[in-house]
Image (cartoon, rainbow, N blue to C red; front, side, top):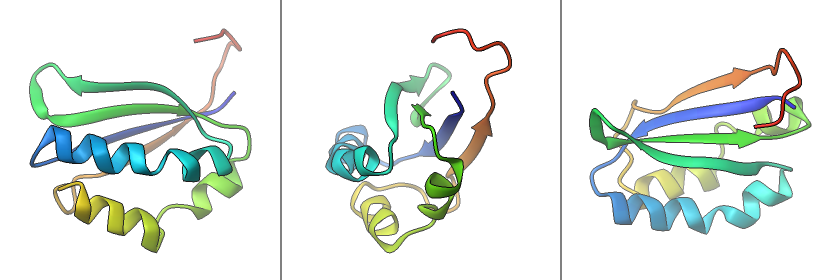
Length: 95
């Protein structure tokens, strides 16, 4: 299974989490599974999200999207802070 690791800074965790959760249906519709939502232990204003998926082309087409950009504004995501890292599982081990 391929993965998407997302790192982004926010101004307020509760506001960020509400916006993140509002996109659950969108993520499901794209075939994304949320595997981990965490905060950076050394930077508490930074979220780290790990998503699993099957169709990389479909997922890549979602970034950027107007719906996602609006959720980032609502969620207080610091502009320019979002980092996306597409990962390939090299050994097929389950997470």
